Image (cartoon, rainbow, N blue to C red; front, side, top):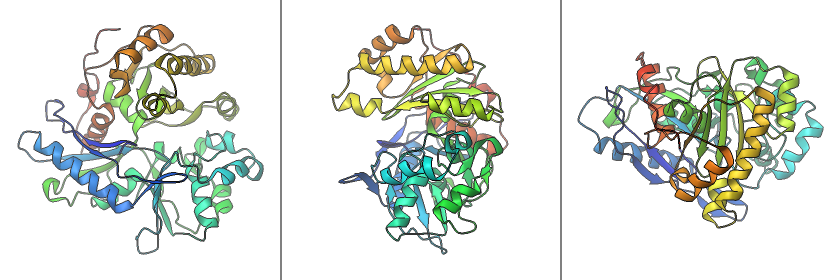
Length: 378
């Protein structure tokens, strides 16, 4: 469930990736950014799945994992009906509320691993509440899609890490954040790791397939690209660009606070028992709009990588994936700014990672697929 397009991919029993099904994400422009109807997101997810299945050999669908954008989500009433549109993560709504987080929730960065600001889900939901729009339950977009495919209403840890509600060190919801919003009991499901069984699909073409929430798309792409070893850094270049490093937990709270002060975030990875140190910025959007050059954006990535290495040690392999990374000018700029890197032979790393986690939820081994041979260093 991407910011620009919703993509689906089929992996066969041998781990082969079949041609992608892709549909534009159905945002509608508003003065502050963009929003979408929750059911429209479900409709395009179904369309992308059907396109992908049409590109694949005949066979039974065993499992389905859904990954996607973080921060954006669906507010539901007590009957499970959406009461508000999905506000895009980059939308400016929640700016004032985000600015209040630091003053009104002391220790926000230390506890959540996020900077106080409008990006996190908490700020957007506070904006809705101040418009008189409240709900009984909130689900991130991939969690919503899994639910509408027939799964339970579940929360996943890597997505929960981007909300501002999760106390990262405890892997549990932060009572002070829920109280600040005025959230009712049961507002958020208990968070669970990516790749956990979440029900079975009711879509006719994949009836009975095991469902899982495969988490935040950037760390999920790390799994799909095989960037899972100690010191591996994924550079995921989509509408937003993210550098992702998997580290052993726990990251001590003082180090979390220091990381946040340097422009990094600390949450949970889709890999079992790993935390994710991330740094992100809107590179793809700026590049397409002609507001920044590939060289300028590569320099930003290099500065963020340096901050990451300064706190967490030297990076090992640098693995680059994503649509923007296929551009020759981006490749050249990254080579000059970041040095040698690898581009694995995978078209949609995030969707592949989601499929692998779906297989895990169904009890299948995904190690041999995740450890696919690496492409030559560039």
